[in-house]
Image 1 (cartoon, rainbow, N blue to C red):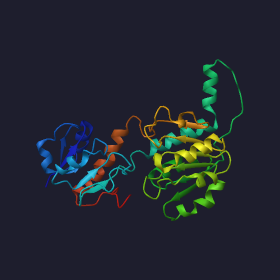
Image 2: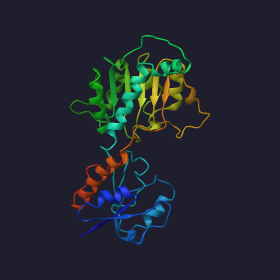
Image 3: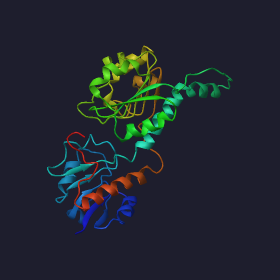
Image 4: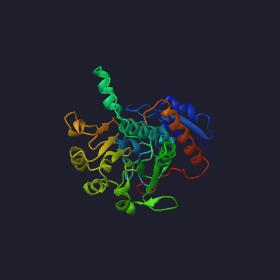
Length: 304
């Protein structure tokens, strides 16, 4: 038996052409589907969920699996036709996202922005800075992203505590956050966006942090209450680094742009050279499992 897989780019066609029992069929986003779409059991989206997506899926009568190239699946959860499985690309982007967190933490503690400003002004302005070494770091999210980050942070002599939605060996439960936050000098958010995590970081969460703490959001913007964060930043009680915002994209006149103590990037933590190749390594493995009659490892259950 041969499984037809709709693929949005030539990289995917090449990657899947090596898989026994798979026929990759190229399609182009925004153009009519090829005739082979009527036989497609697997779709790799080359697009974000939109109001046009349900109509597209209706034209795939044999669809059984949607294989994402991203780790985030919140736009797709609850929107698929009955019986269609959803698998993420968990494992492809953890390393680059963890690298971004390390970059913004080092920049924040070593004040690289201040020194860059002095360079532009032609000023030789030596000063002592803080250090990442010895910091107590709380990682909220104990999946692939969190594990990748922990490995990198421990190489910098930090003290890392992990928090997951449920407690397990070496991982605290999210219900323990109120007791953990007051001792955390750095809090890094690496959770999926679900009904449980939306607005998790509210005014009470931020008030529990010690003065001078650094909040890093590498998950999704709505995990953080933007108004509460703005209030904490304007009070100059904490600092923050955001790769994601709510709203997103951030309007040009939004107050986050000028908030004190904030380092902001435009959702690029995973945007590195080779990201597409790493995505297809995971996607191909997931589709191979499906073709062999197994469930994908990254199958989404419920919200995640």
